[in-house]
Length: 121
Image (tube, rainbow, N blue to C red; front, side, top):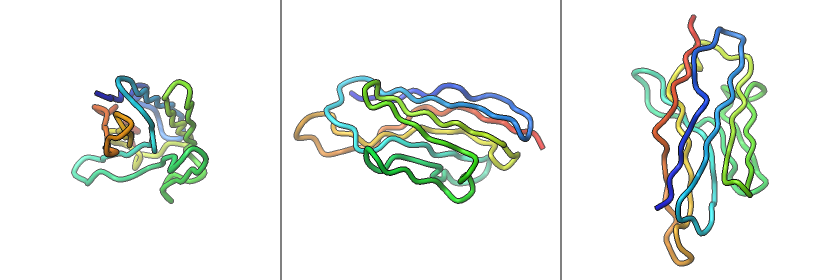
């Protein structure tokens, strides 16, 4: 079964940078999208950025100009470079992959366990 694992979270002061990584593994026939979501304490999970296909990239307005997503299709990885971090960026960051496990499988979403990002105010 496909799975995704995140890494790279931590504590950073406001204005600092962090780079998150997500690696997909397991039985994967084709990946449609890979991207990032986050969930702040007491709030719903929200979308941050993703590749909607192999070439299109989109970002939430709150992170545009500060975050950059990159993907290595050969390695099935997606990274999130986060610059000029703000306290409101604090939360658990999740990687989500939408993929076909087999050639005739219905595409499904696969989530990682999340990685904590903390930006003290």
